[in-house]
Length: 244
Length: 244
Image (cartoon, rainbow over all chains, first blue to last red; front, side, top):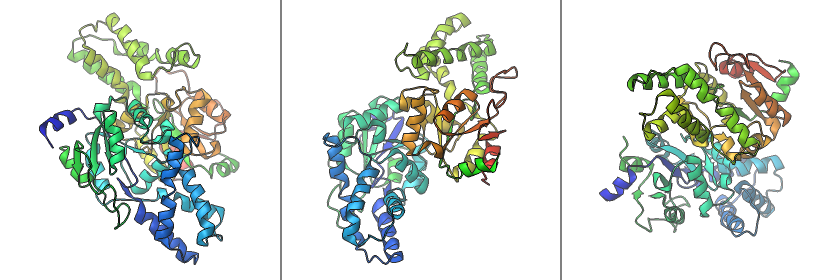
């Protein structure tokens, strides 16, 4: 990182974190829940296949909202609809409504990556920390509780009723933080997210999470631009930002 | 508290806390800052008189927003305007813009009441905790950081751009929490706030803070209705809700 970058980052007040993938390991967490459910209810589920299909509903769902084809629809509802449509195809007809709803909330029972809590705890000493996720406000609140993430507040796309990478999602976060863009950094494992943030003047940090989608992941394996910081994990980010 | 009340409270998921007065002792905290500033800059300030006048700007300010006379105006700006108008009358012309801005943020450097952190920590084991304050979102985030309040998320009137007791302030909180009204309790030291919450179906807890406005306080000395819980402080609230 150049000294010019560090000068620019001297005025940072707040860090916004993409959360699924960047801070928490949703895949192994949801896989574990699916495996336990399958065993308990003798479903003989192909958990990886099921999760891949379920997760695949996310992108087209938020794109329909972004494109105006759907009205504002929370991610919880996108996953709920997908779950209801997948369940009969995977022999899950025996599950009750309450069991499906509990399973849908598996997206909130996601473990942090091994470095996340330590890294956030170090960063919190100097910066205001918040998620900036496309997930429901309540879901992010529950993720923070479940994973013990020391966020100072919760901000999500729901506060703007616009999904990232729509500018409104980032701009609403800046407004709530009471900060100009250059005092805020987006931390994300996804290049598209950082691209949108940089366009609006936010500082950017890429955190490599090459296992987010499992061992055969092909996307976001590396930084695709010269982001202000490129970090191996959140502890490395704290170190590069000069924290102890 | 009757057993019917306790049955009704069995389904509680989340607690919303009025914050200034209910959770933090703004008066003694801001008085201390004014005293230190006065000594440091030889202002010979009548701190109590100054603070009484400064605080008096709050109610007419939010009422102008509620009544539609002013567009949405954050509390930080209401206090900023009042400070600028008071400063010359109190011989504070020597203060720089930066010093005035720092002083304005004294409202975020407010100490918790002695029971607040312990009470919240106990309540957090069972419930999602959030402020529901008329203060700026960022100010409440800073208050939580300064006072070490273990909130799970931050919700303020700014999220609704409507001040309490407008229904929108409470309804936006319910929407963000993803909860029906009867699963959420408002905790406040102010009867007017609880009245508005009860009208919308929220559970209510009154916490007595008879020294919020100093030893000569005449308002909100006691519960004016049969709120679901009437508590001496936040530890008592945790005890009455059955927490350890």
